[in-house]
Amino acid sequence: MNARRLTLHRPLQESARTPVIARALMLALAFVAAVALAACGPTVPQDEIDGGEPAVLESPAVPSDEADASGSTSAAPTTEAPTTPAPTTTAAPTPPPTTEPVAAEGTALAVLAGLDEKGRGPKTDYDRELFGWREDMDRNGCDTRNDILRRDLTQITLKGGTNGCVVQRGTLDSPYSGDTVDFDRENSTVDIDHVVALSDAWQTGAASWDEQTRREFANDPLNLLAVESSLNRQKGDGDAATWLPPLKDYRCEYVARQIAVKDKYDLWVKPAEADAMERVLGDCEGFLAIENDDRWPATGEGDVVATEEEPAPEPEPEPAPEPEPAPAPAYEPAPKEESNDSGSGGGSAYYKNCDAARAAGAAPVYADDPGYSRKLDRDGDGVGCE
Image (cartoon, rainbow, N blue to C red; front, side, top):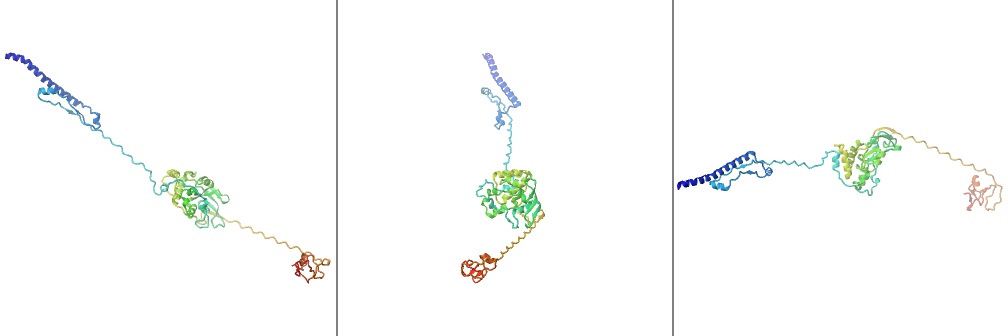
């Protein structure tokens, strides 16, 4: 019996060992697979590159029934994927805010920046005569026009007998065109231009000025230039936005002078005018502000080369002699006529009328004188031909 049981149970023992071997083989294969995966470097998911948690690769799990059958648990080796740090993105630097360039101190642009900017005011009640143009503000005996002509012209001939004031002839090198212009007082082609026109000043602040300020403005040498009459009239009352000198090389100085005048008298600039001034000065960056020019030429001062004396006055003709009076007619006694007049003086004298009595030197004729008659004594007072 025992031998038989042994014979009968040997296959059972063999079959019992077979699952154990299989399980050991499976564990070995799992280990080899895990090692192979680790060696190949598993791919890291994109979400880990973007900053997620690193992935963990696990070996195949051993079935639970196999673990139970062996009576012990063999953990499969695990391989953690190397952590790849997410790439660092450097933010681009924020550009500084754009700001307008600051004009250098002492330049015309810096003075322009300090002027008020407003729209054009009304022209109501404007009258050129309110500005007193050409008045002798410096009391040197010369009007403003001749003061500026002596300042701006060369080769000047003064008119004699005017205390060195009046310019008779001269030469102008025009700042507006660059041309040379001959000046002759008898047929003038030269005007005095107000750099800031009187009408423009009225519409940018001068309407509220008192009389004295308007006169000082209109006769201020800073605001006055001798130029061709044609260009002065072409300009009219335009500002820098509507008119500029044709000579481009002079435009920076022209605009800088306008700015200096407006700054001196607290006038404002209009938006389009300010833009035009900035454009002009942009072509001559750093152009210095025009200094206040309040110097008047003294009497007779300037590039004077001659004084033209006035011709001596012609002598007045002597008055014509008065005509001699016509000789009195010779007295001829008229034949005696009987007079109807009473009170005759009698005698041989007779006078037809008072003219005859005067011609004879007998007037007046008294009642007792020869030749007296009532017809000569019309008022009957005894005296004829009074």
